Length: 94
Image 1 (cartoon, rainbow, N blue to C red):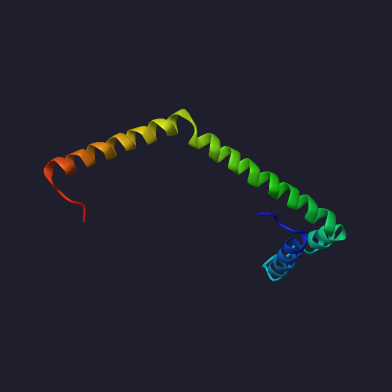
Image 2 (cartoon, rainbow, N blue to C red):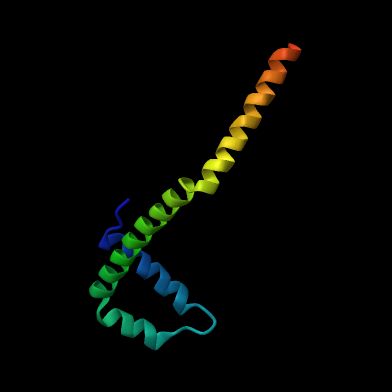
């Protein structure tokens, strides 16, 4: 999913309202951020896109790791044994 600048601008407006009504609103920081709002939102969009890619790469590496494959094989072996016991005893799954 690609995040557009329009979506980020709407999210910024909502966040700004939340910040304004917070207990200790960072008013000067809000003004500073809005001075270069389009540039700041573009940088945020790029960082978000990189973060999504990095999370996907990390997930892939975790799932294809040696430990994950071992766990997957162990679970599969246990399910096969359970299936064999159920078939041998004549039990039918509900």
